[in-house]
Length: 76
Image 1 (cartoon, helix red, strand yellow):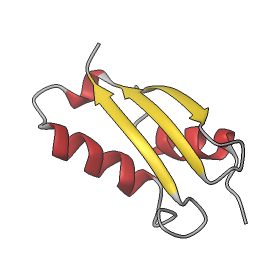
Image 2 (cartoon, rainbow, N blue to C red; image 1 turned 135 degrees about the vertical axis):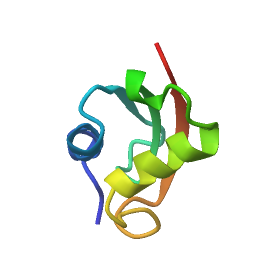
Image 3 (tube, rainbow, N blue to C red; image 1 turned 60 degrees about the horizontal axis):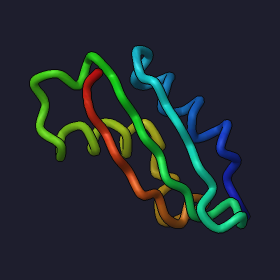
Image 4 (cartoon, helix red, strand yellow; image 1 turned 90 degrees about the vertical axis):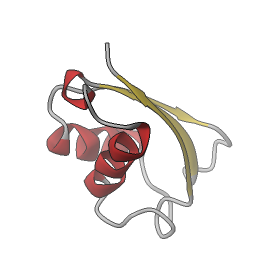
């Protein structure tokens, strides 16, 4: 069972509305993605806190439907 890149982006933007999200399917299998999430609301947050916000947005899909996500976050 794979997860669509559009669904990953949608979930992130629901939780972090000001985010610019870029998703890349790394293996073509719908299970291994790379995501870049840039958001003004990340300002003042550590990298760990930024990643936690993104993982929270994915509502527990990590390790299940979404097997792997290489994540880069930052502020504009």
